[in-house]
Length: 394
Image (cartoon, rainbow, N blue to C red):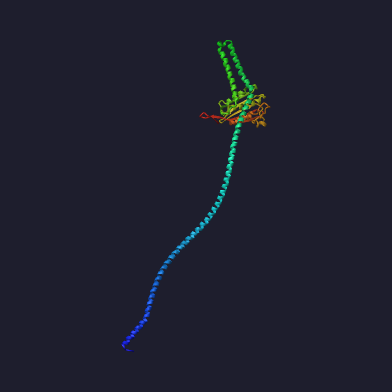
């Protein structure tokens, strides 16, 4: 071993240089490692940042996953509701389709109904036109029938007057003879210069003649009223006066045939709404038939009775003739039906009587007792007087 200091120093320096030479790569390596460490730290830091970012992302993803899960559940509910709505819509669509088809049928039926209604309307117009023409024709026929009936009634009255001519002439002859007698007595008294000595006697004879003139005038007026063709009007009529007037026209014929007439009427004035001339013709026809029925009977009697209720007047005309046989009982009110000999009757009396009573809103019926005479029952509504003084039907 050398003890030279310079050598030792050189050796030391060489050792240091060798160490430095050996250390330099290490320094370089160290520097590289530091750079690498700093790079790793940077990477670690970046990785940590990424990890944190990833953790945030994962957290956000988790939250989004929860949200998606909730949305999925909501979507499932929505899909379920949609399926229900779709099913409901299908059913509604089916119902709407059915309703549409039904509506089409209804519209078709309505169209057909409108066509039928239009045809019916046209038919109704024709029917109404025909009905109007028919109504006018019916009115015209009714007017003709009414005129013919009035003519028939007038013919019946004239026929009745023709039958009563003999009795009426005799009834007029009596007052005319009396007038001649009273006037003759007055002339005789005047010729014998009794004008100054006995004027009361002359006046008495003249007054008696005037009474007979009034009696003849009443007979003629009654005949003219009964026989004239006048429009039919209805007014309050006292039924007793009608019956008495009818009897007065046929009284002479009844007297000549020795036929007794018994009349039983209420004391009060019984009023009905009617036509006095037509009602008089009714009783005159019944009296004429009764006269002919009992002319050959030993017991000759005609009975007329009148009874009243609150709403109805009933008149019964009974005779003592042979009655009406059941074979002809249903035909007695038929026009032109008669059991009399040819030329002895027109067959219109009872037919006219029936129609007149019907026009007075009444009824006439036969209560027949074969072999015991006939009884005709007439029922007519009674008229009442209102507090205002008007007369109305009962």
